[in-house]
Picture (cartoon, rainbow, N blue to C red):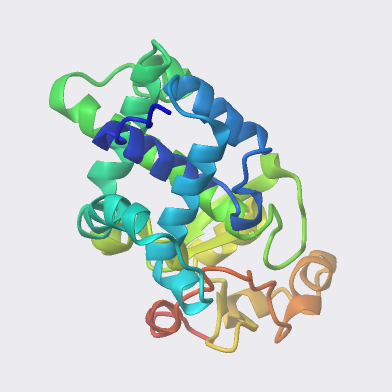
Length: 257
């Protein structure tokens, strides 16, 4: 019986790309996204793709704590990709999207036409950097919506069109943690904006705090309907990649009650 050829670096990066976007419980050969990647790769079966996804789970610190284990050989193959992600998240995530486009006979520009349109007035290196940032933000959004099961942590709104993947430590303030799912929160646009502007915050017990500025409107109808009733209530905390305490503390230190 002929054995399957070893996975190339590009193939492993594509498996990792899917790992970032797919819930752990859906990393099986019957999942349509797993089947699609197998088709894109051409020489891999859905079963072999699912095994690689499990290999990545076995080197992911979160799943290691849960006792997820993989075969030693498979673990050794994916460890270099995981280490590369840890040390250079932004470059690897963008590269994974570029490779995905290439395998489908496409380009980043064709995969993300809305980004290219938004940045049409930019040229040269400035445009390249801007495209990379926006593509990575798009992947981060998929990661966060996956982690939070497409639900706003405050209101429970579950329409993806209304949800934003916000950062606890702002994007501009910590480059290394930009794509860390423990630095993300899934919120509807209203609460994401309020969080960004320091009108609300989340403490280390995962409870919602409201600023004095916002409480100045306590007598207005919108206040109780959209904010007051959630004060000191726990947010929806995901099963995986919960907000890291240090990140919440960082944001709390900037918050004015």
